[in-house]
Structures are given as structure tokens and as C-alpha cells.
Image (cartoon, rainbow, N blue to C red; front, side):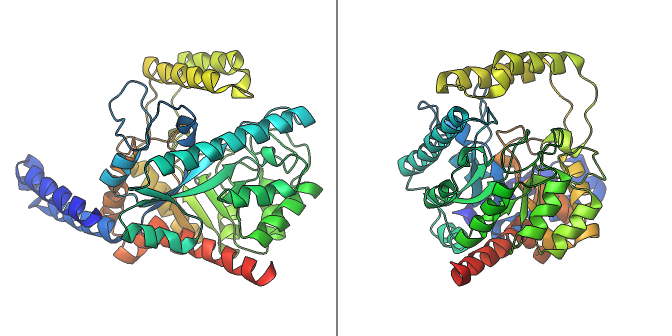
Length: 414
């Protein structure tokens, strides 16, 4: 299936290029690059380590198996567009916003997480001819050969663990294969990158969670956590760690991104940073006070998007998209994304970078605004001279290497 799609794409690109002024001007060089990129993209096992599409799954009217492109307030990921963009696998996030760190708050967070797990499983079950839940590193290739999209699961924010270490294994049994230790605010596991320091890194309980994740075979995700928490995680974990959706701080000075020292330390641990394409993490956005004001008003209206019912979350999501449309942001580009990849390769090495879009959680750049356009990243890398081997490492082999190492540790230490 993937190869047929890529043949059709190649024919289309050649036809398009031959009829253009660009083809005449460069002697067909761009068309040749497009054909080469299409072949590489077809042969690569492509994995996106982070999307927030499950927030749509909780809306029972949403069908994962239908192409939603062009629809009002549409999302960015569904099976038809994964097929169109040649994406074989992705980690679908069970996202829970940070709420009150009380027994009641923890209970609500747990219930919300369980509902999202159930929604993922149900969406995949309803589209079982074209997708399947994946829980092992080997599942990605197996399902690709079967013509199915591999749906891995990650838990974004350790908040639903509450104070019960047993919930880590509970989430593992439901399919989670990584946990992002926190989100935008501190929790009982660690400090966040966008909150004031409270714990000076990872807490005593957070250390227990890291060890339990190592034992079970779950990847530690260091995106969103503070710098001190990051270095604590590297020291504590007996396995390589991932940053499921982050960028280079040297190119975009945002606390969500990793500094060069962090990139080097991650590489020394044999971990991987998965390049995020959320525009404001890729390139510092131009001032847009009306947009900022409107979005802040929504945060206040919906209590920071915490403890919302499914109906409230649906309304909040639609109002947020309306704000996007009314006050559009000037997006970073695929070229800007490749600049980050270039820098990460220079600092950390080709074995330590991958792709984690954050689609449906804000991720989108000009040239790659939904999953159907993922091939444009490959094309830009080909233009820059990346080899077939390097591109395959970036698109999945690096992440699977880490996942396999985590699995192997669990087998030996469970």
C-alpha cells in the first residue's frame, strides 16, 4: 500500500515539475530530488513520537478512519492522512492537564486518563482493518508489513499516577510505553520547565516512578520537565531516555527546548530528542497581542483547561481553533525545522534525533500542517544532503533503538 502511494506521488511530482518554470530553470534537479525523497520516504519506517489526537477520540462523533482535512475546526491526524503522508506509526498521547494535587484532583486525573485510554482502544477497534495497538518496538515493522498504522500510546503528564505507584503498572497494562513526567506545571513527580522551582528536580516519589518505569519497560520522557529534573532523570534512569517533542534551545530560546549541554548529556545516555514542529518552539513568534489576549481569555474561561467534562473540552477546543483562525500566527517553516535537526546532529549526532510533531497539541509549520504533509520533511532533508541511512535513523530507527533497549532492560530486571 505504502509503495503504491509513493509511486503515484512520484508520478504526480514529476508531472508537476516538468510543467513548471522551476524545472526549466534548474534542469530538472528539483524533480530528481523529489523522486529521491519519495523513494526514501517509502522505504523508511516512519514514526511520530507524539500527537494529541486522542483528545478528539473522546468526542464520539469523531471517526479516526475518516479524512477530516478541510472540515471546519478539523484536526491534523487520521488514518487516511497518515496513509497519504506515509506515516507508519505514532505515539498517541493520553494527555491530562495539571489540576489540583489533592486526593480529589488525583482521582479526577485518573478517571480522565482512563477515559482517554478507552477512547484510543475503541477508535482503533472501530478501524481494525487499518490500524492496531502497538506495544513492542517490533510491532511497528510488523504492522507496516500488514498495511496497518501502528498506534502506540504515551501518557503525557504523570499527574494521573497520583500517589499510587501501582498506577504506573496499570497504565503499562493499558498500553502506555512512555510517560512524560510532568506537563506545563509542577506535579508530585518533578518540576516543570514552565513553572517556578518547587522540588529542585525530581521528588522522592518521582524517583520511585522512574525506577518502576525502568522495571516495566516504559520509556522516560523528559519533554516539559525542568532542566534540573532533566539531569536528575538522566542520572536516575538505568535506560536511555527520550524527549518526545522538543527542539533546540540554541535556535529558539524557549524553556521547553533543550540546551546544547542537555543535548550532549542526552546523547551520552544514548537517548533521543524527537523534533517538535510546534511553531513557537521552532522559531520565536512575532508579537500578536490580540491572539495572546484571546487565548489567555480562554485559559481563564476554561480554568486552564483543567478538570473539564467532555462537552466542555469540545467547546474549548473549537473556541481555541476559532481564535487561531481569527488571529493567525505566522508559522515557522519546514526549513526552520530542518535547521534544528542540523544543529542537533552537529551537537548530539545523527543517532540522537527523531520526529515528534505534537500534532493536535499545537504542532504545525508551513509546509507540514498536518500528517498528510510529512513527506515534506524528508524532501527538505534530501535537499540538504542527508543520506538514505541518516533519514531512516531520524524517521524511526533511533527511537526504536531506545525502545528496544528499554524493553531489554525490563526483561533482565523484572
